[in-house]
Length: 252
Image (cartoon, rainbow, N blue to C red; front, side, top):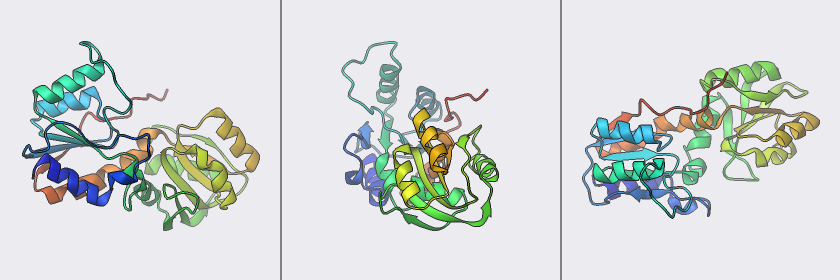
């Protein structure tokens, strides 16, 4: 397939028109007409991932997070963004990103997150097509649930407020979704799993009595990478998993 045809394949699963207005998904760098023999899948289009793509002879990188994400007015030598763009163009490597459209998609980030946590009866929350709700097969204490989240997501650590009741009904939102905490409380959630929580979200959770688990941006979204690989198999290209893609945060 060509780069454009692979983009259309992915777009059928996660239409870019569903992305948030601030977002920048789609074919972002490269030549839509170029033939693709080898694809590298990663969460982040980091400089180390781009260098890996060059070393492994990749034609296309498919990521969750976009590059560029925000408006960029300058590309100067020595700037990591400029170095990434230069490497991509010099080596004829294209880049496709599926971002908030993949968060929303059936089978996308948040369905993958809910399934990774072992939830059943998974559904989209009425307040947002982004958030997923589900049930644990058996109740856990808040402390047991926090440990289970860490283990099931292979997270290096979690930050949490342990609520006042056992955990059965759970809401999840991969990445930065703490703005839905109040909706989770109204929806009867015993726990909410997300990332990038600010101090005041933890204070609110403590006062509302809900368990709030911040499992990290990378860990809550990397669960979607196997789905991307499965979808990309239809392209007939060789699908590689990045070996350098990792959480940039170190937990001491």
